[in-house]
Length: 231
Image 1 (tube, one colour):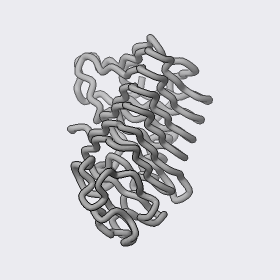
Image 2 (image 1 turned 45 degrees about the vertical axis):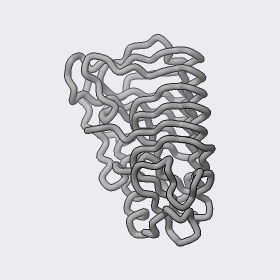
Image 3 (image 1 turned 90 degrees about the vertical axis):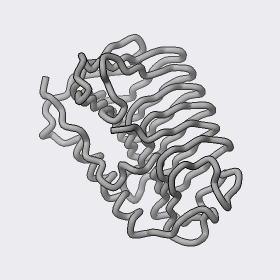
């Protein structure tokens, strides 16, 4: 198997959430990392319990204009850079230069994956209550890239489990369309979606929820926990 280099996130790496069309929060979530929305206006950032201070957020919120929550900083230049870097990261993860991926399909429940590049031509899921194990074989620098030409869904109470030194910072989930994290599911790694990302009630993500491209869609979350992983 070809040893994979990490996907370079550059300026989007500081973001827990980077959306295109809207960010909708159902209180109360806990988000560690930055939040940003572009190109849509700040008015499409909603649901933070106290918009003046956004107590759910440990980090900064960025909007393209002054119409967002009072806690938001107006910085369209920074946001454009982050969104461009997310698009570059998406393309990098899908690049032919990464070699031939190992094939995956359907339900990943019960599988153990080792470092490398994986791809499904259709959707991927982890069934309700199921587990997917990512085993770094003792090498903390090992990289996992898991790509779907369709959607990625983790069902209720399912979980991604990191073993033998695997780190969330070295796990990348790339979906051509949507990513959905089910109720009370546990996900590890950076998620870059072609369209929308949805984190259902109580989902926990050690990673990032990133839209790529100007035509991508919304990020929605409901009483979720998102933490940008340590390097």
